[in-house]
Image (cartoon, rainbow, N blue to C red; front, side, top):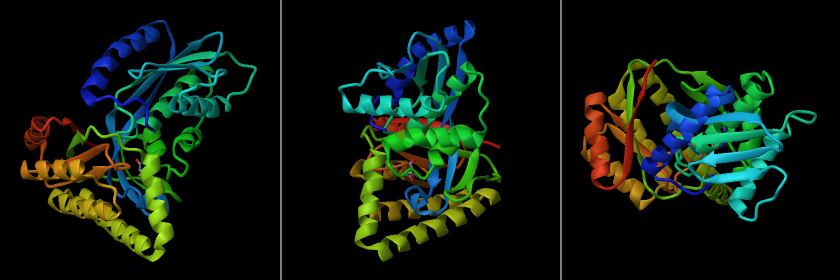
Length: 337
Ligand code: MEV
């Protein structure tokens, strides 16, 4: 989603202040909810067309709390957003957020207590890190706890999808499923998540391009290419699916050299689909020169974030530093089993 964008550093600084507020809420017994952010290791976009994708949850996501109030409200920090369910917003992005909140609230019909929901984003919007889905899941979980509902994971995913459809018409569901379940998994639209066992820990550097990436526009762009030349697009999706299946085996074997090569190949195909940018390509090259085993954009593309695979933890920090030296925000993520 394209809410006011925060740099990772700014977003986190502001998030800490807001998290203190959430902690106070917890001390007073407010209901709490959490949604995971994620990175797509391989397979974004083709996953919308039924192919598999590999995704890993990251520790950062969104936290929310909910308390009884006079009227349903949603606030999101550090975006400085506060809206009422019953009052249309004049600014289009805020009105989309209100509509998404309404889609979720409609699951909990009257009579019920009105709620003030306060969310704290730990990742920026438009970064390709599943921020929108993480926000939806944190909000839904906080509401569920406040109203003492006990939906299943599948029901939570469905509720998150109602929110996601407001922001981008045709989500595959991978972001919502990861925001609910976390972990490392292969996702297919028809089958949902299948957990993947790691041969050894995965260490990734996540770099943010500073450009806002609109998943909606990028998904629509791929749809136009698919409509124009269906055979060519399907061929590219099949090629990406083959990379994803090989990457799953490489992950299970702990063969990160091969995984890195597969990520590089996936990046080439994403570039063919016009999803990369000059900055993302530059960032991939910076990280490869700094020793990354492979690098690619992650998520919707057209801006947002990229990931680089490090040999191990010791090799990750110099890769992140190389990005910071070029004024890109970067952080290290370790995926363990
Ligand atoms: C966004 O994180 C991943 C995309 O494949 C869209 C989707 O799966 O809904 C670009």
